[in-house]
Image (cartoon, rainbow over all chains, first blue to last red; front, side, top):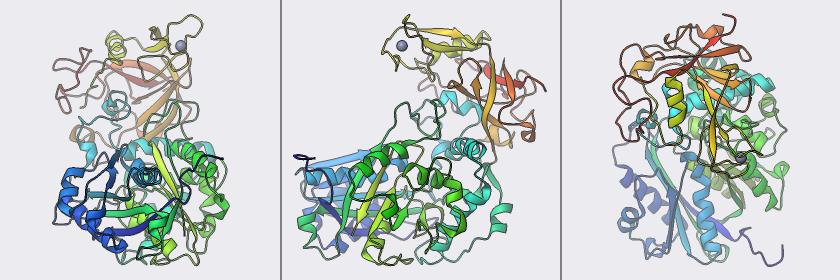
Amino acid sequence: MAGLAGLKDATAVVGIGQTAFAKQLPESEKTLACRAVLAALDDAGIAPSEVDALASYTMEETDEVELAKSIGAGDLTFFSKVGYGGGGSCATVAHLATAIATGQATVGVAWRSRKRGSGPRPWKNTTVQLPTPAQWTRPFGLLRPADEIAMLTRRYMHEYGATRDHLFNVALACRNRANQNPAAIMYERPLTREMYMTSRWISEPLCLFDNCLETDGALACVIVSKERARDCRRRPVYVHSAGQGLPAQHHGMVNYWNDDPLTGPAWTAARHLWKHADFAPGDVDVAQIYDAFTALIPLSLEGYGFCGRGEGGAFTEGGALEIGGRLPVNTSGGGLSEAYVHGFNLINEGVKQLRGTSTAQVPDAATCLVTAGEGVPTSALLLRS
Amino acid sequence: MLTPVVDDDGAPFWEYAARGELRIQACARQDCGELRFPPRPCCPHCQSFESEWRRMSGKGRIWSYVVPHPPLLPDYAEQAPYGVIVVELAEAPRIRLVGNLVSGPGAPLNSVPAERIRIGAKVQVVFGHGGQGGKGGHGRDGKDGGDGADDGGGAGPLPQWVLERP
Ligand SMILES: [Zn+2]
């Protein structure tokens, strides 16, 4: 595409930082945000005063003014917040990459800080505005994200023969990786099929282990141009391709009103992602796939092109998602077993894999897909070393 | 129980529901006429702002369902586990309504055991003060309340569903 410079490898992640993860941390979200951001800048070897761009989620409670003045950022020339909860995770990096590639900024920091472990459950606030007005769903007792996604999961199982064992395969792969990761909340807690099959229901067909953790914690990463990246302390991890996805006639997590509700935002993000990439799904060494619920993984495997329509459940068989399998996923433990911080830990884990520093390292990993929440307007990144 | 927090687009649906009618918004342009749900200001097919509310037969099939268990809001936790269904309408399978399968109008959310719910089962709409038991109030802070059927202390009737062959 002559004349179109594009984003391909124009920017790189050069710093990552995180706080501890726990059910309850004593410090405020703002303090945790500052700690994660400063840790990421320190990792990059870049002074806070050089930061001129910030990006986060609309659900982030610490705004740019508070963060910038606390960490001692310089003059900001670009700041952006992305909506739709966990669907915005990768878009924070994508927005910074775009800003830096087009000269709007030079040093960008993306972050998410959240006390979801000790704080309130968002669904208990019944006045919050949802993408699709709640008048159509909530009076009937469809109250929580788990209920909304369980509805699609049941239909998916019905149409394509996916089973609870397939969902267990997802939960187990994440738990096995968490058991290798001392920072993971589930580090010392192995999972068995018996535990899974006898656990309590949250919203049938989803049980306790199909649901992500409730975590306090914060993470951040630093993005600069590829030229600047060469001078940084760590090996650059390039943003090879980035995309957002809001499909035609999509309705958010209650996507019940189009021809095929099971074809979600992942398909839209994926088409854009692969169109701008030099490699294909078969070339991906490791993937960090948004896992607020286990069922999002088979759906995303289909959406991002690792298998065909309806094959996502079967794809998980035979240890395919484990280290050494066809596509190792969520190698830090993911939202199911490391920490649920709206998917930001998946971004940082992607960077660790391509630096070769993961606690569950895929040998010679050179390409990584990172995805944001499927089932809501989403985003995704292809990273390469 | 949560009552519908009605917005401008949805108000006619609830006004018809209060009269025991299931009506769905449709494009009023003659050469279009597409049904759409949830309601919205203009037609995504032809961009016309003219709309009408078309009466439905109230027949449909269960497209999917879930069975929520606690933690839930208190009024729902009391009735849990209960089924929540998505019904695709006989006239327009892409128009799907979230609701509850009940034993009769106004019956509680758990009045049909969850084990009896099946994808594909034929259902018929009824209108009742669904599963409301006593008066609600939770979740109604009046913030976005339109002038729809839900104003005042009592909830307006909700569409509920009964099995065509119980
Ligand atoms: Zn029209």
